Length: 95
Image (cartoon, rainbow, N blue to C red):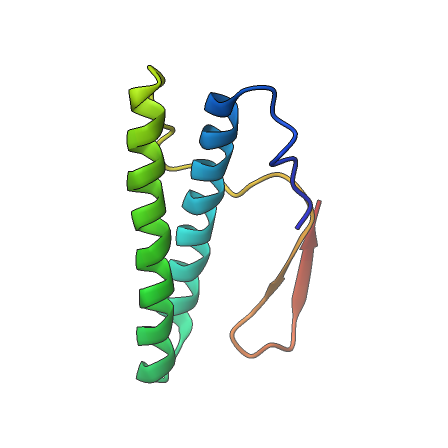
C-alpha cells in the first residue's frame, strides 16, 4: 500500500496518521476474521487485531497529551489496494 506516513511536518500529524493506519488495519482484520472458517487462523488474527487496538489507545493518549483529539474510526486509507474474495478466485482493484 502506498502511504505518506513519515512525511508529516509535525509529531501530531504523524501520530494522527499512524492512528488512522491502525484503524484501517483493525477494519481489515475484522473483515478477514469474519470470513475465516479455521478457528486457529481466526484466533491468530484476533491477536494481531488486538495489537492494533492497543496501538490506537496508546498513540491516542500521546496525541491527547499533545493537545490534539485522536481520530476515531476511519475509512480505509487512500492509495492502491487489492481485495481477494473468500475463495481467492476474484480480485478487485481500487485506486
